[in-house]
Length: 635
Image 1: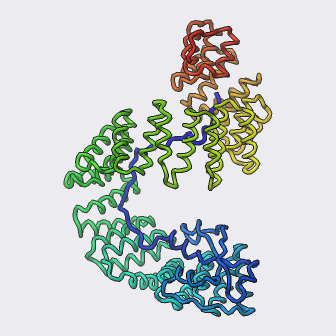
Image 2 (image 1 turned 90 degrees about the vertical axis):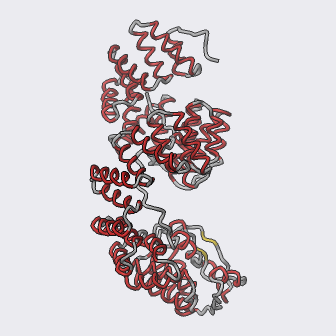
């Protein structure tokens, strides 16, 4: 049997191997916010020459994104360089105390701005940086100095970025973003000493114990490991008696995979503050990365004997037990945490996942409900509770859970699930309406929406419409494997063998181990042609890749039936039916049983299937072919 692609039908489940968590190191400078605000100055447009004249330019939005200065810059937008006649308000946005110069646009300055604009639109960052910095020096406009530093960062010309940022700082020494940009430029250039001086100047009245966490948060987002380690070494020398400095230093070293320094600074933190849970978790994390599983488990167990109320380490211990598939013991550890801290949402989620693994559904539901009561935005709990509602065929309740998922990372997938639920409660058109209203923001989301719509149309047996819709999607993404596979499935349903075979073979050429494509092509050939030997070879390869897949077992049973090997066919089809008692598998199993002379067994299998779905086309065609009817059909 062909495995349908269900698009948004995938349900997120909680991970059983609990990840190490060191602490919520607060980041002093939120880089995404920072770079987004820095880029708010933007590029001039060549077509805005008239507005540029006499310094009366409007703030024209430019929605085209540029590549990241760092991981944070990829969603920033750029606007025009100079302000319009309502410049007072724009000056306040840049800095409450900053009085911007009125630009006297000489021919040379105007030419630099236009060239910089064109260069930036063509992503010629070196030219854009040089011309914008030249304009900044000529005009002493801090906005241009800021923009020049960002263009230089895009070009990875960190020396120029430092120079432009220094100019910006000189123009406005109180501008925090100017100092931060200069800091980032020094870090990117590998200049530890000036970067350290800027950090020192920004500590102000904060205690080193709090400030060092923020410093660590900045450094782990940089690409230069040497400069990050050097700066943390300076802080370690400056504050040798601070356990927090030692641990934050270990955190930075661990981020750059420097195990030697991670261990050195972690041990120092534990010497300065014996029994400190966060430092112990850092040590456990390092042992895990070094593949010292037994030593890690012994260490955690010993630590818990001495510090039984340390929940973080107990969660780590549960993770070790789960990794060893000792799920009952892992759940027991989580229950100990909850006995002492019943409002620990993370522990409730972990306990629920373990209970689910142990098929303790009621217990898992209860944990997830408690976690949701503590945090109404707990997406993991909502996904899980929606899954349980689907298992109970309570689609309205499942939809309510999905509708309340609002986080940006989960919203799109949740709305795909809403469409699936709407199909069950209100029908196909209502489900399609949900998808029409859902705007994808990425290629992946576009594909997910297209394949979900395709799956729903297949479920509704709207094969022609599904074929048209997937062809439309393929005009935009002709090489997308998921879309090609989706078209192959509906082509097979429409008996468009040439299209189905061409699409599936194109996938197999690119991905020889694509089990679904191998299975789909094998099943299609077995079902619609007499090329049984070829079909069997394809299905055998798919079965090697996924030996317990019910759909592939069904395909193997079907091709063996075509080859008149009834005994083996029944064996494979029964295995498939036991693993996934689906209507299509039942139709196949019943047919082979009937042809083998076991009519009563066939009737029993078919009766169960028609009680589940008395409109399934494959089942109805099979019953008609053998002249079998059931008067007591499911309503």
